Image (cartoon, helix red, strand yellow):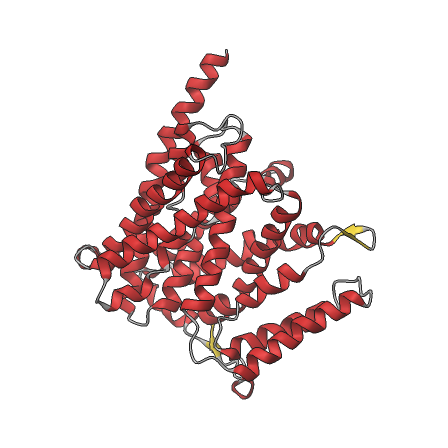
Length: 389
């Protein structure tokens, strides 16, 4: 690929979605090939010093450490939105916040209604999140001429959705909490704030503090990746020392998250053995149908219902050029939970069968949602273009 074309590809907003799909395909092909045993062997390899409690297998290093970068970037994007983005204007922020709440609560309710009383109910948080990079990438692929306000509304909903999912992980999936380690993590955060107050402007001195906060969080019983969100929200907004720190970090770490962390997570976590028997087993398990219903039906009803109620009740208004058809498309794209849905699956369940069946539900929901949203949003674009012409 020539250098200019490669640069355009890397700069495109569709690229993270393409890489995520590619990584998923690689994992599926790998685990279902004659070299499938090497897949399990690789990700099950334990690396790290046991004396520090860091003797983790490679999959856990990806999920607990590398994905901290992903959640840090999510936190930065949220703070940027709150400071100067779609969520900075309180009136404009109401609609995506309500849509995100609806798109989180309703799917969880649908999931619980179908799994209540079974072990599968532990995964109630799986259908709550929407993957920002994946949804925006798919939107750009299936609807290239969609108004920019649709993209911004989708991004705002997905970002708030993911923060809600982070809260769910912190509250619903924390186990054996240690007050001592939580206190140490909190002290590390306070130390970072003190460094900022003392005028430390360079980024590198904060790195060992961030590692310390991550380490303490990992041992506290709260999932280690939450340290990324907390540290991101503590990052100073606006100009510091003549530069916008959040934008500098997003420029440096955004590509690391999109091009390294998330694809690595997908390769490590979407390797599902697919056969006629495994598919049949998945679709006779209530967890698969609960994930499908939560993501497809719950997300659609939650997002479109909240937007409809908010606009009719005068609590918010749709941005310019966003139509009812766009709202329907957003409700469908909300089913692309993917990265965070897979992430919660890994921490919600210990039964390998439940994990695989939930993942099959997540992948199936993503395929259905993208397939239905593509002609819906694409038709609207062609129709609008003809009308403008």
